[in-house]
Image (tube, rainbow, N blue to C red; front, side, top):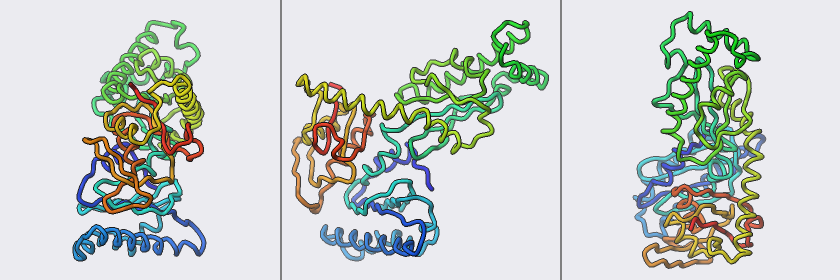
Length: 380
């Protein structure tokens, strides 16, 4: 199964061209029906071809554009992937695909940008968090969501205590001895131990300064993973306001990114559920007060999304509203079925909200507060 990172999603959002084609489909992972996977994709390619013909694209250009995706039909690797859904993104420059843990409905979208709303539950406001895995020998920062995790490059952050303080072997042995006396580390048992604790604290202060450069402007939870005796020392050095009170104990060097992700999600998952419920309650409270910051008009929500004024967006999954939005004229034209040049206006609102730092919750339509296909809490 592939990892979808924040960088991947941002790259897809920023991609523009005359034609960007997005394919989504469910994947059968076992049994005789696995043979249906390439057949389904072939049918989606035919739909893309038909859409391009309606857009009056020349046949040779259609063939050239779809050729890389056609080649995937004969690539065994794409059909051996583990995941419940397949997402393929095709442009004249390249073709990219992801096996993901979400069962997508079959969908083809042809427009000037990629269609990204089905991906948002993997990485957006309903599940993004960091894990800081700390030991004296290794520092790792992981970025995760409910379904994925990836390692973040820590430029400017020391990778170990010995690197930060340029310790020799005897110093490292003393620090390991401190770790073995976890229960008494703060009881002032000697000048040497106090010195070692100060060294560790200085190391963690350097780590914290480095993290400020990477995530200071974020508003997502940070889970600390380390052995017991290091957790309180790092908390003293920490300046990130969203560090969780509860951490993961044990030596993180022994845990893979997948293991850390699983344990961290057990902590942050319930918090995200509470956050979502709180945001829905906040929306309803604003509606009850006739506060204009509660918005569910498609036109006004699209305008606010383009202006970066949406703090929280609720948008219906597996629902498309086809039409056109003119940001300069602030005009919306909705069509009952997709027409040439249309885009999913729900996807447009979600994409702009995400790009401008808002939280996006992709929910079943009956869970959207207000009963519409989207609802938003505006910053102002």
